[in-house]
Amino acid sequence: MHWRRSREGHDFSRAGYGHWESRFSLSVRSPGGGKRLTSAAEAVPFWNYLDGTDKSVPFPTTVLFFHSLFMRMPLPRDPRRTINGLLAVLVFLATFAGAQSSSIHEEIRQTYNFQPHTLSSAEIAQKSGVIDRFWTRAKSQPNVYVPALRQELANFENPPFFLYDGSMLLLSLSNTPADRKVALAAISRSDLRDVQPNDYFQKVHWMATLNEDTTAAALHILEQPNFKVFIPQHALSLAQNYALVYMLLPTNQDCWLQPAVERLRTEPDETAQKSLILLLWYAQTNAADQEIATFAADATRPAAARDYAKQRMQAKNKIGLTQKAESLVSTETSLREKRRERMKAVSDEALYGLDDYTMEIAAKRK
Image (cartoon, rainbow, N blue to C red; front, side):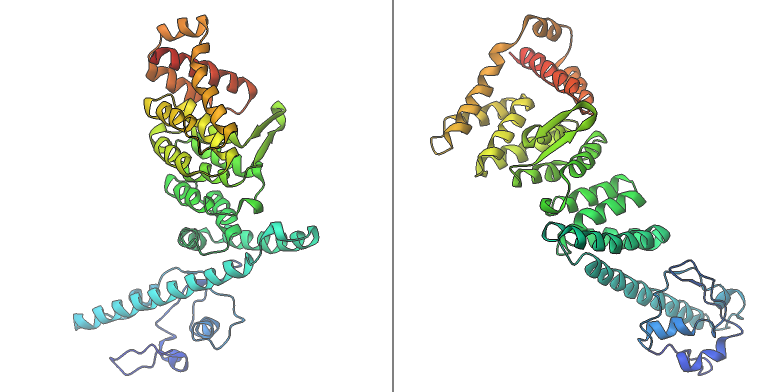
């Protein structure tokens, strides 16, 4: 690797760094937060790493600024030389950033080169230490790892457990709407066999309460018929059906209604079919009602699922007097908004509220 300065023929390669020692200061911090390198002699390990001479040198994490290059070096008379200098710095920074991104990519591939559901307890304990160290490095250098995590989580060819665990790491470092969207897209491609259902449910539901579009992440649990969560504070168990409802109803219904309709049309699993039918019942729209009716009349569908669809269709005939009265003093929009707010809490009381508000909405629609 050779970086050369043409004005006086100075060699800006490793062999020629001495020419610049008095006028050039490179500020670098190591992963451990080490000292700044303020002379070319101190920066030798840095050059050794960049040109591949010494791969044992920890990859430096942040080039802070080439302050001596412009603050202490006399400006050339020819503006073109200034421009050339600036371009050289930009080229260096681009090369540095590219190498850094590649390094973190390889670190991720090596750290997450396993799937927890295939390991023994002892193997999981050993891998947990590896992941803990990765998290520690990332937390100590968020300015480096946050951009890298965004890029790597958008690459669905990365290890599936990273798509979930890396998303949790990103959110711990940067809880912004943009990063929540990155995380939701990534975890919807994770392998649920590697993830604790309670953890997955709580994270997706939390983002639903922030009105993020959780559609893909929520529908992802339909791939696991035995998906179940337990809420110890309320001694409440949620199977796939109500876990799905909880991960979607706090959000904007316009986001998930049509994807749910389309998924039901092609879904082969009976458990998932029932979960989608329940979700569409809670949608309380003409389109959702029509889809449930179409499913119930489809002789190619499993009998048990068709019967469940018919039960949901008949539920609107069980609206109580109190629910009818409540519907008279509220608008449908306000009832839907109250229901969304109620579903931000996970409890048996919230589920009672869900059913009451839904029946009031159904009464309003009659």
